[in-house]
Length: 76
Image (cartoon, rainbow, N blue to C red; front, side, top):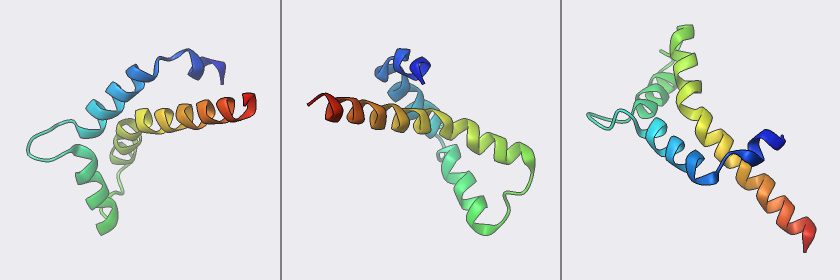
């Protein structure tokens, strides 16, 4: 997981915001995909991949923040 430590947190924040909210108009893409998931309409593999693609930076950011928190807790 050292590769994740080398990625700047600011880059992950920017990627999570832009990919998570893109396109901004008329509504974020992730919102549409979650609505489809809730209605049971998210069945095509391309839609599942698209949801994964848009959420990947958010997942990586969360993982990095958890790792950073564990490092600071262990060194204290």
